[in-house]
Length: 198
Image 1 (tube, helix red, strand yellow):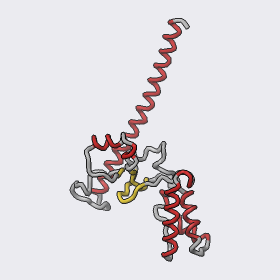
Image 2 (cartoon, rainbow, N blue to C red; image 1 turned 30 degrees about the horizontal axis):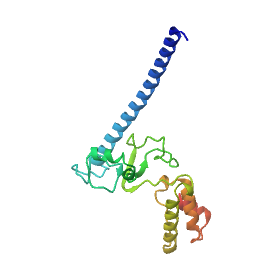
Image 3 (tube, one colour; image 1 turned 90 degrees about the horizontal axis):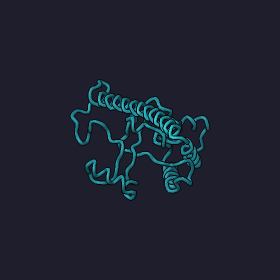
Image 4 (cartoon, rainbow, N blue to C red; image 1 turned 120 degrees about the horizontal axis):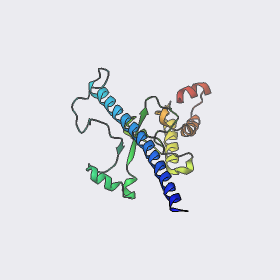
């Protein structure tokens, strides 16, 4: 390991790191460009488009862009929110809103690790619901699975029909389990049932 060899290795490392940084820079630039396009598109639709809701003035109730996250705390500054994100007992109460993503694969969970939907502002956000993290099996979140099965059972028991709403955003393995709970209360033609839940 001569000084010349070490210098050569350091030069190659620097070159590779520069290349990796440039690749990531371009990826981040694409995310930022998409986020700006989505924000502008949302503003045009909500405020200006003839077929949109024409929300009018920007207010606390109708902000310029919808909140993607909610939490059960009083209104606070961004700095205070950032402090909460460093406290595990508080951070666990920050919840991601649910919604849908135009043109996305409905079987893909857009809130899982590796997805950039929230970062790119691609979510058409529903401010009245949050994304539930079921995991891949009941063992991943026993409370949630038990709670939703019981809720589904109560609904099926007391109502003549059940609609699995937000099906495009409900993981398929969860929909299958919940639909099995429903079939205990209804006698359905399998073809009609599959049309009903999809």
